[in-house]
Amino acid sequence: MRKIFIKGGNPLNGEVAVSGSKNSALAIIAASILLPGKTTIRSVPNLLDVKTILRVLRALGLRAEYSASQHNTVEIWNDDVKHVAPYELVTKMRASFFVIGPILARKGLAKIPLPGGCAIGSRPVNLHIKGLEALGAKVHIEHGFVIVKAGKLAGGRVCLDFPSVGATETVMMAAALAQGWSIIENAAREPEVVDLANFLNKAGAKIVGAGTEEIKIEGVSKLNPVEYRIIPDRIEAGTYMLAAAITRGKVAVKNVIPDHVESLIRKLEEAGVSLKVEENSIEVHLPDGIRPLDIKTMPYPGFPTDMQSPLAALLCLAKGTSVISETVFENRFMYVHELNRMGADIKLEGQSAIIHGVTKLSSAPVKVCDLRAGAALVIAALAANGESLLEDRDHHLERGYENIASKLKGLGAEFKIV
Image (cartoon, rainbow, N blue to C red):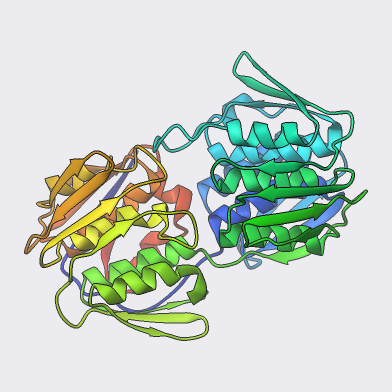
């Protein structure tokens, strides 16, 4: 178990550089199964989730190496791939399920365990399965495994009931090597989807429309090995922006794409936070008190569900009542009890959190129940009176935030991991 001690009350000041996007890296590493030979991926964050997906690739017969000293580079050598993914790894992290599309496209057969991950909702894989079936695959589930067969995938039209990032990426990867044209309607528009499409196109795929509601893919016979750099992590960037605001410091968040955090920028400005937005950096400062907000999480370009937990920590100190409505994951409010232990006043009404602002937060022992809840508790602890203890039994923060202790200490936080 990781125990994290944070002494609050220190304004954060200075500069912090954002790492590569975790969610982009996981999908792109899985997509490397489609590429023969050696693929090089740069700016890959040094995280537990990345280590897990690399272990999945090794179990599938690929050679995968990570070098933090060489600009966080992953090198993957791909001669052949097995069709069965390991149960103990895929059930540990949901993103491991991404390998189903590439394995199917390469082998015509994939056997993948039903996935695991953060307990923030059911997040079924039915949309992934529906998409693969539209490309001609036969799917059945037995003994906890999804078994997918296709002699050769054929282009098809996929209309997603919900703009799922995972399903969009699964279909896009599988369709890259299918025969003919495929169309994904109601596709996810997130920057990570665009990043995956850019990676595949650099390898020789023919994908247009990524970042819009309709993506078109013309299948090709093969892809080629490439070198590629991951985009910055917009959720990490937002987390440090919120940490700067709640501590009343002044922080320049570097290596960020402002367009990717546009919805957060607008909400922080509405809350009274001063932001200086430049080409690849955002300077954050809170000159006065925090104003309350009404938030509804939505698929991109709406307000991201991954940012609602950290933003809730900031709104605990707002002058008035805020409302956060969650529309993506049904269990995203498990952090509320822990923030209330720190003196927050939050009540749940269905899928909404009613946050009555308080004048201060107090240190307390709290438990990290999922990745973004952990970020919320870190942000709250940075502003609380005294020293808080965060028990991170499943190392959630290490799954999503590279070098979070050193980055926060570099800004003046008293932060210690035991």
